[in-house]
Image 1: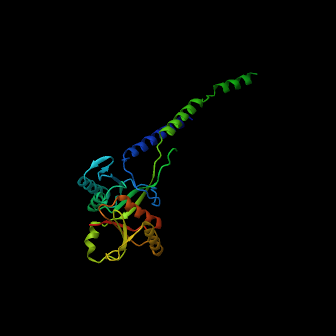
Image 2: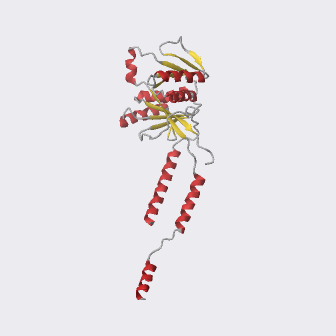
Image 3: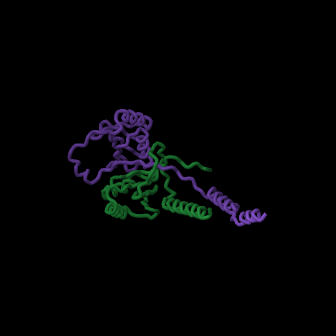
Length: 129
Length: 145
């Protein structure tokens, strides 16, 4: 019984730590627009590049702020490594001007990426659960 | 008599696992998770098509007519690509009705969505959400020059 309990605890700790790490890569100040009818994410492609654009138009990847030129370079590298069908997920704040989103989308187009999608909130987390 | 004593001895040698510490730890963990857990919003991915550089080279041939939605800062317009005369200002409720009608005709048709530079991103998401609601998945998002 004891080894099984050990393994179960190890797994619990592993999942808790990895989930926390994924959460830390997301900018919590970005308020996504609501899309209650949008398709829910079931399986995320591990190659997906998640780029965030905040309300002031600042571009960040994994909480690191980058310029549009740097973003284009990163996308070109992503294309050379993973191909043109690398998915790009844009987490744009609902208040962000489209011209700021366009900079990111144009950079993807320049790099040859076509699989672009926008993140939105399908369902708000229930408070107090 | 001797046999009974042997049986009692064998029973005494069997190791017993005390469950109490394990239950203590499990309860501690349970309380820890209940206190620290943060509910996460359920996300949606709204896929769009972007013209690739190769497509831009092929633009010499006239593109087929398609329904065009233009997202402005404070309004939406509906029309057909290739013309500007037919663009009409439309409310969200009417846009939903029009998209439902179009989806009834064909769900595989391409809807062109153009955005003005100063329009908030949330307004584009609203249109994408309406298209997703009606099952229209071929969406081409471009920017107004």
